[in-house]
Image (cartoon, rainbow, N blue to C red; front, side, top):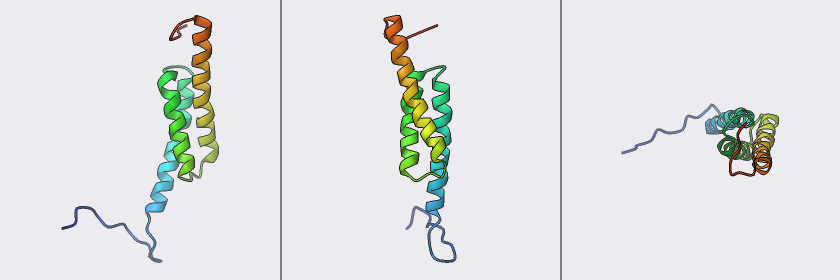
Length: 97
């Protein structure tokens, strides 16, 4: 009894799972960019680390959108830098306008 489906194969007997992995990595690169950009405005404590992790995983999986993943990584780091800067200026654990 087999509970999982077999991987689809192409004409040259290679699996298509590699293309799916790259497609997932491309989606993670875009998501890291969007979350990093949003994190500059709101919830940077949560969105910054998520953007960093998504960018790192997408780069590790070999995304075709390396620029977008690097921007997501940079924006995630910038989120945390903005948080620390405003916390120091406000002398509190969190910051507000």
